[in-house]
Amino acid sequence: MSLWTELDKLKNATWVELSHPLTDDSPYWAGIPAGSVELCRTVFDYDEEMLSCRIHTYKFPGQFGTHVDFPNHFTPGAAGAEAYGANDMVMPLVVIDLTPKIAAEGPDVAITVADIEAWEAEHGRIPAGAFVALCTDWSKRWPDNDALNNFDDEGGEHCPGWSMEALQFLYNERDIAMNGHETFDTDASYLAAEAGDLACERWVLDNGHLQVEVMDNLDKVPATGAIVFVSWPRIEGATGLPARVVAAY
Image (cartoon, rainbow, N blue to C red; front, side, top):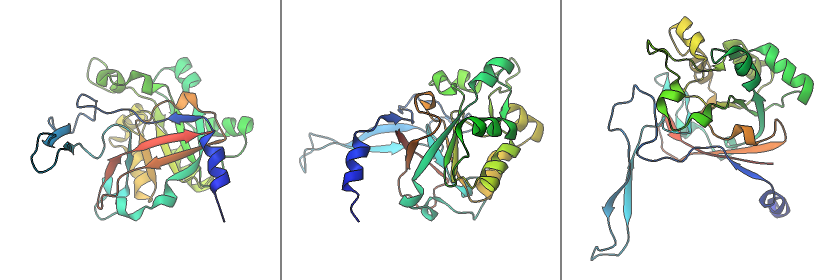
């Protein structure tokens, strides 16, 4: 079977970058120690006698920028990056827009099963194997770390996100493959505060699922019809890795 004709169609599709560019100054979770990022450090340069070429080293946390999380991120002994292959990197993309709810109720909101069912009433049933992304426009706050965390005067975070019921519905009732969002965390901030834990993220990973955090440009892809490609380096044992995420439609 040849896929060459399909490749021609794909190349002529509209492509959207869903991952942020990274520099030494890009924001990351506050719990990661200072000095954990050093990109493009030159260790071999064009003036070397052995060979005129430049080589860089890169130091960064696994959870840096747009990234994919693996189950061992939260649970010792759970599956790491090596457990997932290339066939896990391509999925139909579903985008659920939470921005009207945020505009009406403020940032302390979570997507509910009722929100998903309302989306399905308009767009049709979410297909099995889909990547479901939550559009909140939070990516427009990048790269302002304080704005991304949306701190209050006491240092509390106020970010929209997922509810446990919504994630369990999507994975158990719709059999999706992966979820994604624009914020640093899976859980809506107020739900994380109530639980005293990132309970939603823990549930996703403890059940062998993957997720992508800190996505970009979800407002530029349609609710249905796009294909998403999520790629990451092959580093065995990794708990998370910066990801290049793109969509085509």
